[in-house]
Length: 394
Ligand SMILES: *Cc1c(COP(=O)(O)O)cnc(C)c1O
Image (cartoon, rainbow, N blue to C red; front, side):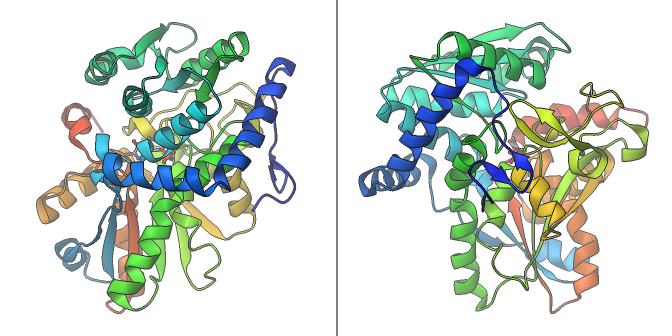
């Protein structure tokens, strides 16, 4: 849906150092060629099946629907992907592309470590060198994922600059790419960054919505009234929404992290509480101060804790094709517990934001209504965060 090459309306673009322009041009043409090559598609589909476990199921959440007392909820089970979330859909596809381009070295940034683990997993599978940049603070909070990456053979490089979190790790990964651009492919972890990444990541994640739409029609004989997904950088959401964007009767809802409340300033809701600006190579909504400094963010869900959002979401918001809303830490934790108890599924805290907002929509639609939610990952990684939250004063 880019309105001109690399743009979604006014958003997107390529705001990068001159030294990266050639690499982006090379990536774009390699990507276009691969994506239209039947052999690449066949290889990708075979790997998605045998390695990731696709297609993931569509699941009728009967007891949660009953609890909400309104519309019927279905979950798209990305939590059942290998490594526990949708992120491997993207990492695997990009590693296959890098291999095709003859790049033997992969770099990635990671916040909570989920994307780092996905990149390290795909690199182990195909025998590529993998370097993952991670903030010092995140390495401390997510030591299990650091150990997983190292076991998988990746080198994890600690980033001590700035706040020692995801945005600093991303800046460091970009610096590495500038220095090693000939041998290295940078696997970005969400639908963000300079063109062609937002488009490339969307195409690799759209398998979520393409499968879900077919499965939904087969199971229910109709389309859902509302499709929902959580939005960090926006990759699982754009992967889910793309299949439905042309269905004008289907409402699309993206749910951001309101943290302790958007009014407190301690949140990560870029579309709800930010304004347009440039971050990590593209023009989109950014959480920033009056004079354009990137603001510190907060969310209990590490995967949503990012001050930017993919440019296509910014455009879909301006077009009013997707509604964006935000849910607090407390609401997400309550939904996390409810889903676990009622469905026997421990959801990640990220999609728990979408589950929390689904209650109001279920009530609004009533019993004849139908809601489809992207359950982007499993919550085993979040047990410490939930316990810590319970001990917190708010
Ligand atoms: C990383 C992550 C997210 C957020 O990333 P998007 O690019 O917005 O999808 C959401 N859910 C889970 C489980 C994640 O690991």
